[in-house]
Length: 317
Image (cartoon, rainbow, N blue to C red):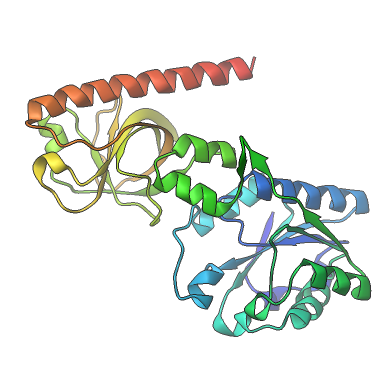
């Protein structure tokens, strides 16, 4: 997949009979995946290429002055779209000036002028242009006039829930990381360096890595079964998110205990892959009760991850 990071670099000569989609694609959930599948299908039918057109930063940070808690970093979004088989990804700097683009100008200058799209596939709630005045009926009329087809993909429902990035963010904030992963078909992850903490875990017999996350969207306080990835290797583990009420701490910390690992982690980059919520945060009367509970959490996490591994092995038989 070729990544293009500016409208000025776009030229129709770059694209052979392109079919494109436009959106934020935060989380690249199964609704987005259906859109990408339709784009790829149309492109294959035409003997052309598939193009995803997205923005950085998120438009809400410019239009509303509020940056949403995003599921994906930009790097994660690029990698997800690459894995979903798109040929090109265009990432446009979303500025105040760009936000003022009239819908008709966007169609003429970008869809037709810069990309030369033969087709545009969008989600059911797609809007674009100044004050979101461009909508699907407008886009369809423009397509008829300027020579490209438009397909609107219906919303996707999963287990009674209409899938959206907003829905997934709410699930993660509520601690339902397993539910969120079902709607994305990939786990929710955080990445970051290991920083110095209070070193209480080591004194309790469970040395933990204090992870400084790369995003603001963090699951609800509590304990989770996780996979930890580092330097191309993967370990099972358990993560506690919270403010350590037993010790009266105030700030939020993310502490990972990696099973069967013995080594110095300070300064190293970890990826924490959330698998399942185990329990909420508890304030213990003393550290002996805490030690007992940590042992129970580790046992629960091993059972959860063991069942997951057995299921994955069965699926690959």
